[in-house]
Image (cartoon, rainbow, N blue to C red; front, top):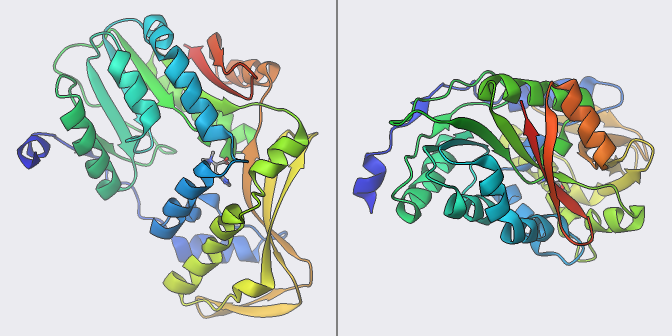
Length: 322
Ligand code: AVJ
């Protein structure tokens, strides 16, 4: 019903446009070379990520969903009534629905998303499904300062929902900084509900990022395809390979794109040289045992109030209170 969407007011904080060329040239000039993982998610990459979630080896999404199915009511109870639920990312997903279905008299749902089109599309769908919940979308970059819109009824508590182990894509110091920003945003009495992947058998983690069907490899290499499309680069995708390894000491998957031979590539009018076997870092996916979660929360001034996991403890959803 489009007339419903027309009534949704958008708070536009006018996030700075991505500087793809600048970020890519800076990353390629660094030693070792690196590219930001946020650039995986163009239209092609977003579709490939959805296919990753269907691969048998990629346990993360289905396990988190299972936790939400089994424990959303308990989470809603722990959060209490009158919550203003802020979600980082567009969140039209099943996990968000599980939560919105069971929250007790929520005051508002506030998705914070950098892409205006993704934000309006997802909040429009949710508005139809949850006509009783005030929808207050905010167009903003959640890594920068975010201001929250005031709902019609005063919230009893503000809670940031950050599912998907997306926090794990940030290095520890940056993840702590993000959590501290969330703490400031929710204020005293507020909380953060965050999905975090667990440390476990390295072989199982590595398999999740090296699926047999090769979808993750395609997802990773799509980053180079995107640079060819948008920056007029000339990466030959057959001369680069996806490489994802679990560093058990650091507790994280490190994904690289590795050059199979010595070669020279043109990117945005600049020549970039690659040695044979040279690796570019493109993503971290950090994994956490409970002590890691407690340490990270404490560094951000938060305390772990509740933890929900699946029966095998492969994934966790953590309630961190201010
Ligand atoms: C959705 C960002 C958490 O790190 O597991 C999946 C992204 N990268 N396979 C993750 C991803 C390769 C995913 N996150």
